[in-house]
Image (tube, rainbow, N blue to C red; front, side, top):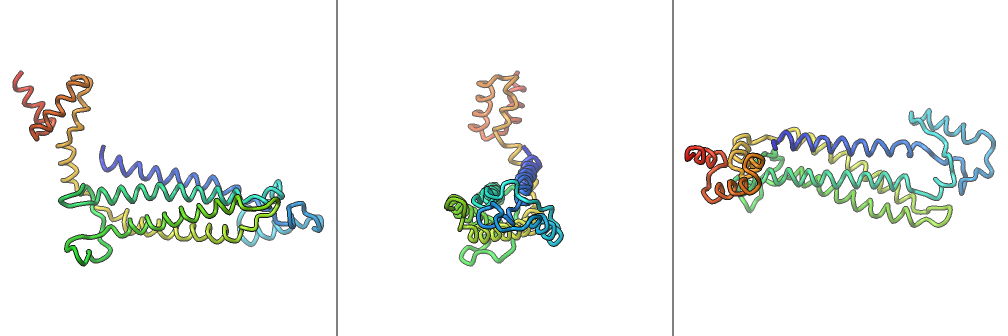
Amino acid sequence: MTLGDEFTAYAANARRNLERLEAVEASLLEIPLGGTAVGTGVNTKPGYKERVIESLTEITGLPLRQAENAVLLTHSLGDFVALSATMRCLAVELIKIANDLRLLNSGPHTGFNEIELRATQPGLSIMPGKVNPGVAEMLNMVCFHVIGNDSAITLCGEAGQLELNVMMPYVAYSLLESLEVMEAAVRTFDEKCVRVIKAHEEKCAEYAERTVGKAALHNEELGFMGASELAMKAIDTGKSIDEVLAEQDQKK
């Protein structure tokens, strides 16, 4: 596979997580305002809910709507838990991508060295020449924080009693914080890491040429065992798959 294959998959992963977030939006536009304490609407005048929703829609510019079941949305924080869970899923995927980039950046002599992440800070004081992948590490830490917030939000979602859930203030605080720090972290990761990645074309070409994985391309013509022997011969001789095949052709 090429770096293009790999980074295309990262982009597709980002789009899929965006779609997950967008799928949660609709439920957040449904509000139980005017349901009073438990959602039944006791002590409100006719038309109160409709007028409030109309005013809030005008103020926010959002297509808000009255809850179909106000009792449900009074005792349940499930929609917020779902958003938090989606944020956790995004965090997990971003951690994976950041870790991959750190691994591909490792080197230049004792690592993969397939790509180069731009240095955004001075190198390590006790190790001359060492530059830390600081932006990717920043994203990891933010994602760990978001995952921690999700754990607390999940517990708050189940901690309500009957028609009330008194844990809503913390859920609001943590959820808004997760959204804010994740937005800032992703923007920084995009601008200061992803968009300035430099591919080491010669090193990638060397790996592509020297990998014994190329033996798998000959499974059909040589059979599995034949391809395995080809791979082992390349490993034992230190030659490439193409070089071993060329020698075998010369002997025929």
